Image (cartoon, rainbow, N blue to C red; front, side):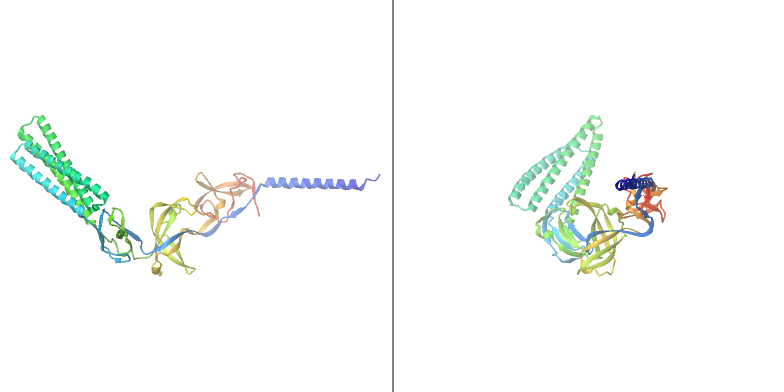
Length: 443
């Protein structure tokens, strides 16, 4: 009996399919035994350099602001913009009339305290009654109170006149100074009288004789007056220093590039009166991000690139100063960022004199090394502040701790834990790579 050809062909296809299925399962089983295919990277000895570029400016020694240390009317201006000045040259003066008036009042008060001290000593020698001294002191309190009330009335009127524009700021300052002095003098006289009266009462309550009371009393009065004399001398010294600061001088050689004071009739303490650009050694200045600043050190070499006529000109320098604080700014994306100011000292003889104010690209060298062990940064992962890589050992991924010297986005410099020629697993961020996983190196 003959078997139809169609049935024979059907059996052949079924047998072929079975064979292919067996082969497929075998291959998958073999692959499963081998594990996950991974990429590997060789540990190599290389030269490594990491740079950071930031925008900057060429300067000629920096810009300095002369800030007024006292308030007052601007009296006279001695320079103009673009004038060359020497250290110590007079730039402008501030009217010191009110300060001179305060000093005059202070000198008078000091003379009065010294006279009272002498009077007290004479009274002690003559063993006059402390009651007589208290009577004179009480009269002084009344006189100082009257002076205070008069000064207060004048000062209140000056406030109204100044608001109406009827008097100048200088006149108002003078009346204010008189008021403050009168208030202080009244308070000091009253305090001296009350302390003396209290001390005399305490001496009397102790039950000692009149002669002893007189001696102790005048000793106390003398101590009070000496303290007031010392305080007044300090006040006068401070006023003299302020008067000296009314003459504002250049604190360095340079060129006056700006004179805000020329548009002021009255300048407040802390306001900028003039801007001086120092002419000297050429510098470059830049602001770096706070995560970059710790990588920089004074003395580090810097390359400054200036583009002129569509050509890059390269100049050498070194970091002179890294400021110890950061300033808040806004990034190009509109986000808050903090930057640290860096000053670069440019090497001499580089023909930079005509480039004051030019923009430049500042190239900072963050890391530079020869003959370093290097692997891809994608081969390193960190956990618990430790760095690790994976190597293949007997078909399995084995974790190995390494010590990292420096790391960029692309390369990592290994200080310890690996040798030249070792192989590590690359791209270890895969979930299929873990300690003990079956792996094999792909071609």
